[in-house]
Amino acid sequence: VECQYSDMLEVLKQQQNASDAANGDSKCITTRLEDAVDAHLARKNAKRMKMDKPPLKSYFKDYAMLQEVTKAACRAVCDDITVAHTAHEISDFSVTSFYEVGIELGLLNLDRHYVPYGVAEELDFEK
Image (cartoon, rainbow, N blue to C red):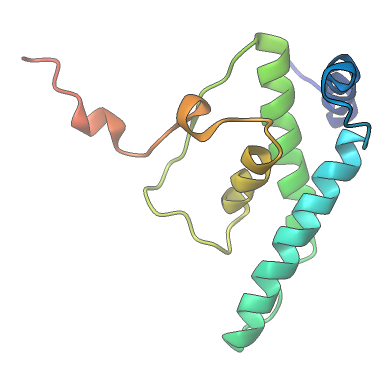
């Protein structure tokens, strides 16, 4: 199945419209996501500046938005989602680290929707 970013964003907007009546939050989901991603970028770049490193590339915002919209829209369409990170330690300066945005906005839940790297190693099916 191929979905365009605009289609996935529309799914989130429709979901938001349905939940707005319940919680009274009328700020557009796109704006909330962009604001949160911008805030994360600002914090990361401030941290990088203190380390005498250049700011993150401009495409980080686009990839972070694509990543979070995709996960949240897939969850909305499928009723659930499981995200498996491919590394135990996630660099604060990676696009993957923006997963925190979706958690902060309540689009995903860390305990329910994320499987930590290495969890399969902890399972022993021979017992």
